[in-house]
Image 1 (cartoon, rainbow, N blue to C red):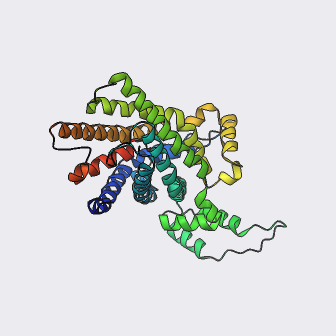
Image 2: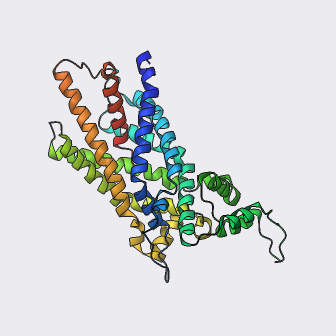
Image 3: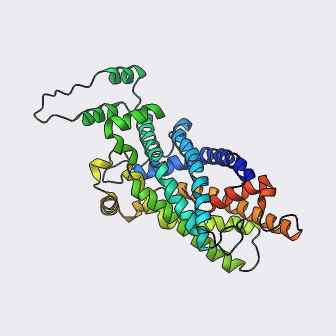
Length: 354
């Protein structure tokens, strides 16, 4: 690797992390509503989910997702760069960019690797949202919470069946749920152990791979229909991004619902595994429940997808213009660090959706 490229990597990671944190914070209320709708069990006699909450509640779990975005961006750069090196056509120049199925495969591999890294943060986020929903409905006083958590848990009960330490902690936290990220991490460890940070691993990875596949297929199909030979303008690219986001939500929403349910605090009570979860949601709550939270997710994915496609197409068109004017030769974007950084960011975000 050239020295210039090595010095660009920290800048790219910093820029990518800043962009990811900004986007996550901006669209997080949609993430909160999506998760809230998905956690709500649509059983007989259950009250409907109340979407109107205090403004502060809409950002519960945002800290965990921002930390996840920083980790994800760092892993994404390393994984995507390595995948491009492995999948690049040996007959093309070293500086050439991936296209077609090779770009799809690189995006899928990157999404799968980064999804493994974000699973613990996703579990913390879901628990923080669950706790915030409970606290917004009935708030215990700070003295009650502090007094209860300071008490030593007694492992001697009068009932014939003795409760396990984890079960006793579950009873404590069910009455007095945690409210910040550090106490939530402690709650997950005490009530579910280390396995609690890995809940919903399979549906999370499967969702990432499905997202990348659906988005790439929708993008390439529409691009070939609209402009098979000429580059798209930014308006068409933004429109394709919105349509691709609709396809992603329509086809992968059931996976996202199962993923959220499997990461909930009560998952071990209701579901044996992901397939059992999907089956029970379908039988007990109806097929419509498999698409819970589709509207807020569409807003979130559509906004990020439209921006990613628009920026990607803009930088791609700009690079073509510079090459025609002999300012940029053979895709050597290293002469323009800012252009190179934006291009890599947009290319990596193009087919990787949450």
